[in-house]
Length: 88
Image (cartoon, rainbow, N blue to C red; front, side, top):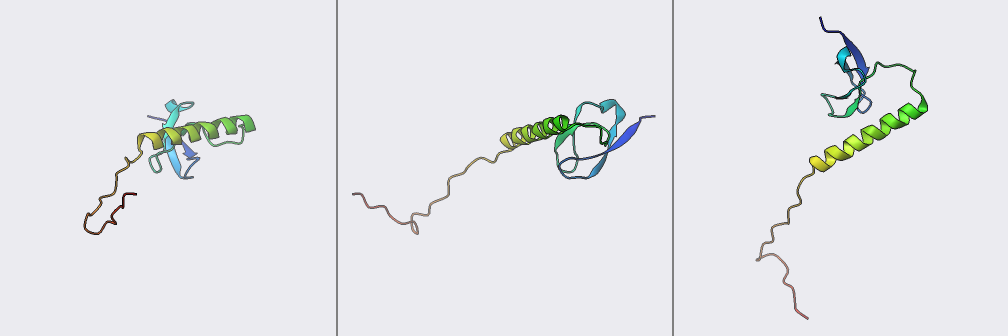
């Protein structure tokens, strides 16, 4: 029998079940794809721990945005309707 605990996603707030074997490891929310440290909800964290957890979430979001970034595509220019450039 696998033991689970319930944790709120720090990004979207949804309650998710996490396997106890993952305590202390980085896990991902199935709903918003945020990554965070698996730890049971409690008020035992210090402010330093909260700051460190916040920074790790920010860094993970930045990494995801770099991986998932959409390539920039130049707009299609219609030669009939596009304004012409006058050489000076």
